[in-house]
Length: 145
Image (cartoon, rainbow, N blue to C red; front, top):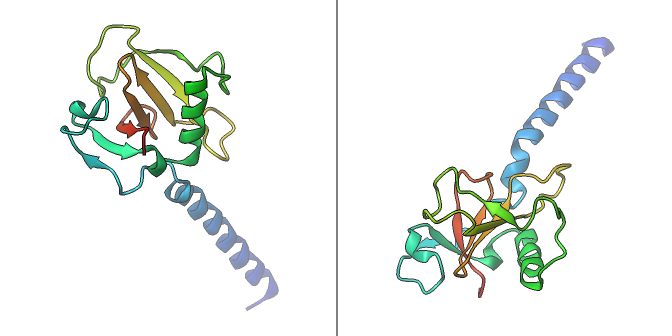
């Protein structure tokens, strides 16, 4: 094998490795809740009656806990123009409520230059929901665990 061919093969291999790494990064970023989640309508966790899986806060990415602490403290929030604003539930994944019932907050994604897709959404009666995929799916968050 000539040195020119070896360099070409090495470059193709490097590009393939970068492409595979790019697509696999979400698998290992901790954006999905852990396996400790369960569907439990009998749970005393606010929002559990929605039929969505209930996940402990400790089973979510660590940035979700940081965002939750910021919410509890009343701020400051990382994205003040986008956090603590109405969430309209246009996708209809959460239980239907009157406009103004839900508020949304950014859960930062490490390595993202933008707000990313992760959010905590709170309801007026204490519900907390988490989405890792920009509102396509949600889990109920048990903030006590």
